[in-house]
Length: 151
Image (cartoon, rainbow, N blue to C red):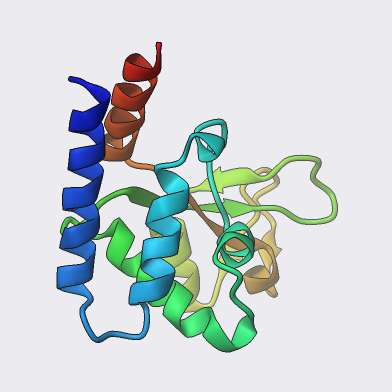
């Protein structure tokens, strides 16, 4: 695949996003995220957070709902450039601990969460559970094609 081919794929994908989100307030933010995710500077990142995405899209808290809608779109099968995961981190931990979606769902529906390392009940768990977004297989393939063409 030539670099022009990769650019064409990205342009097609960008057109797909514009078509799917036409007239919706999250379109602009979604396109900024797409542009960032397909830029060389983002390739070194293993994941992004809402905070990272707010910075790269120059969004403030007033635009957070649009940011959430944009990430929702980018994690759906319709776009699938990102996969959403969750991590738990509290004051006693040096590094975040990945937690599975079932644990998060159970915590939100039943109001109880158990520390992923100690098993202790955590009552204010929403202060310590964070969503993170990792590149999907599709995005990794896009990036691989870009790197291959740049060599």
